[in-house]
Image (cartoon, rainbow, N blue to C red; front, side):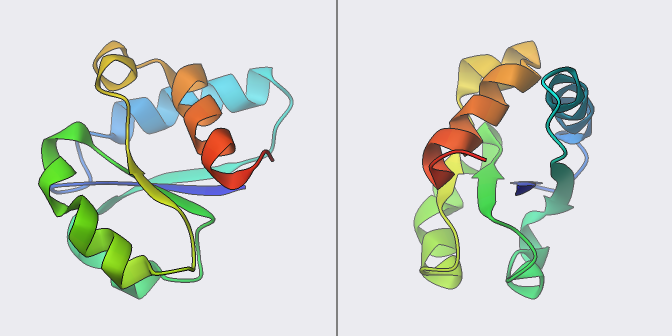
Length: 101
């Protein structure tokens, strides 16, 4: 699975990306997980299976869903999991949006 996290500048999600990569590896999953600036979502179309937005940019959810359309699911990262840097929970959220691996 290809999971793109998007936030205001692609920086605040970098720690969460690392924790997600560690959790995926511990689960034996070979996912591509990366963070990007919200402005690069359109240019990344086709490169991801799911887009997760940082809670701080939840206000752009509707706009991002319109841009992404049926290409992939788009959702806001659970705020509690984001704040705790709980990579495993965020991976589970992505999997639930895509129907699994």
